[in-house]
Length: 168
Image (tube, rainbow, N blue to C red; front, side, top):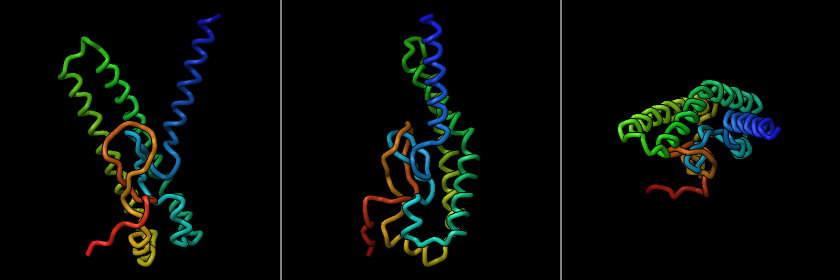
């Protein structure tokens, strides 16, 4: 009976973890290493940019397309991170194997980063020149945000900590 409960707990945990990973952190991006890669304009941007309903719909469609296109890559990244953790914890694993796994992870991260840039460009096409200009004036832009996951540098459009200093 205890084995059955143990199996049920593991199945529920895996189902929950998969669901959480599939949806990613709150917001419009995906995250890793304690940060959110806000891969596009976040929900708070809509109010500040005064987006028309049609623009909001297009933004949502772009977000869904991005999430669907990156779903398999995010899942692979999830699996490779687990494999790397297991290799690091294995006293019999050699350095070459660990480094090879890290290279695989970096390739997946690069793929996600490229998709994120494509997503930002798609969203940018939806905006008017005035709205794009307002992004720089209001402090929205590349940022480091709090999130969850495990990875590398995390940049994306989103609400930063305040207005960025103007370069003179």
